Image (cartoon, rainbow, N blue to C red; front, side):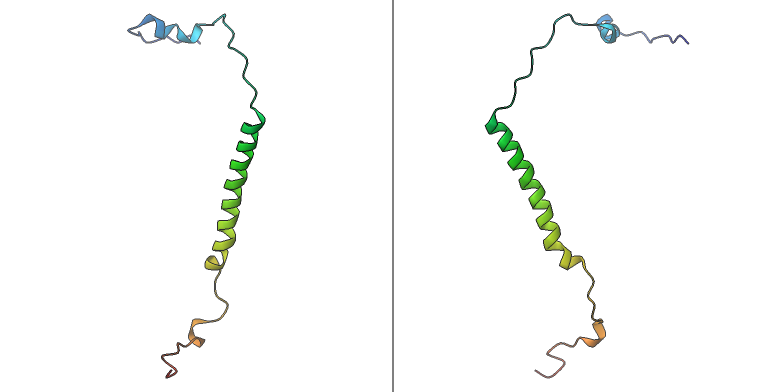
Length: 79
């Protein structure tokens, strides 16, 4: 099925999807040992922070087992 393209004011925009470069990009540089260690430490810090916040937040998220009617404040006991 052939589709007509809409007219584009600049010809290079219409031909951009058909353009192929014959220039190969330079090879990527490998990360040094320090960069890799930094990435690992950053990831480990983020994961440890998430786990720590979950561990510290779980008591606040859990529901109390004792019913609220049985709990009395010290003021109501005359202290």
